[in-house]
Length: 297
Ligand SMILES: [Zn+2]
View 1 (cartoon, protein in one colour):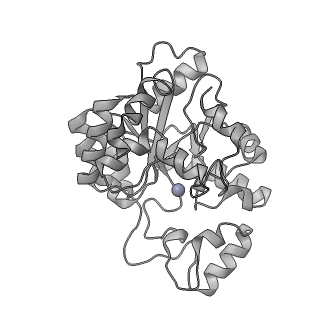
View 2 (cartoon, rainbow, N blue to C red):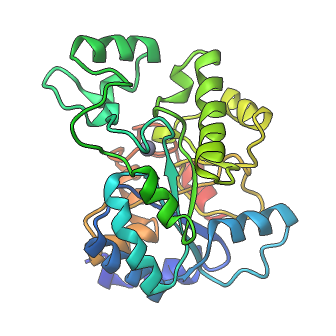
View 3 (spheres, rainbow, N blue to C red):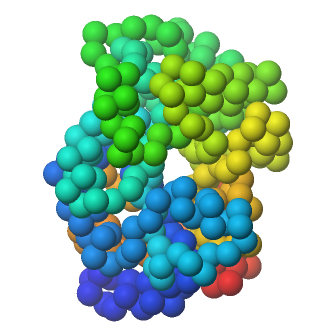
């Protein structure tokens, strides 16, 4: 209903027209990606993250096309290797944020380790060391090698890097503000080093795991030589957006075109946020009215 109401079109032609939209996927199989990306190509101008970063640094977004949209994927899930033929056929740029401790190994993402007693949403709220203790009691260790991989292999990354912009998503995907300073620094610095030295990548951007960050993380990123960071804070990007707080809209991985349509224009997150059913700038609470208005600026 929302798709055919005309609202997404209205938003694209007003709020999104002169701003840059960044969307986020995760574990998106090839066929779903083809449907999703084809829709985005029709309705938006898909540009590279680097083109936006460069224009943002120069302080001039006027050369970017109207309704610019950037496609990103977090975590480097193994299904991402299916995206290479898709982006080649559609001739579009995408960016994938890798966890350097997972890629090229049979280690698993801690938040995908399913045990009845483990609730990822609860674990994310604990100090990182406590979270790791609880996971260890349930048989999970960050460096444990399982029988099958969950992340892209080294060959995948090297075989895709001519067509995909790989950037950083820390080493082991902790919620950074739940780490002590030393752990957070290690996650930020070591991931950049490993991706650059072992994969020959140029890393200057980090996507905060779970979208969680604080002023401390921004300071650490600057100190470590990053130039940008990406959140899951709601909204569209302009010159006013802080380069360490680029905004991003989450889309699910089903490749359902109705969902892609209402989610890529932000209306879904917005409506869910109004009733407190969607994380809104880090919090699971109804959107404060002053933040509703700030979206329009
Ligand atoms: Zn992630």
